[in-house]
Image (tube, one colour):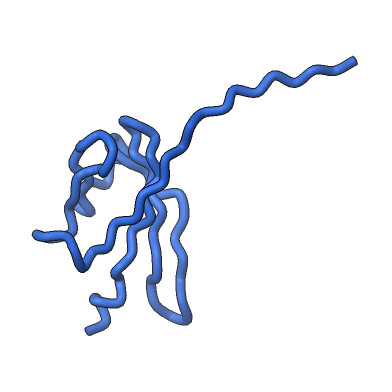
Length: 82
């Protein structure tokens, strides 16, 4: 008999629209409040899990906060083409 033991970690999803942020695209994690900045390239604060394209433009970026584990769906990239 083989038994698999799996730990289930709660993942909380949030959506952040760039249109609703101020500044240069930085925002606070909706769950823990850590600042997430597009200028941070270290992956100490967050990591990019997926990038979604629509036709030939950026549609959505899915991030994971390294502090609390929340998944953040970042949208509003259509503003970049205007």
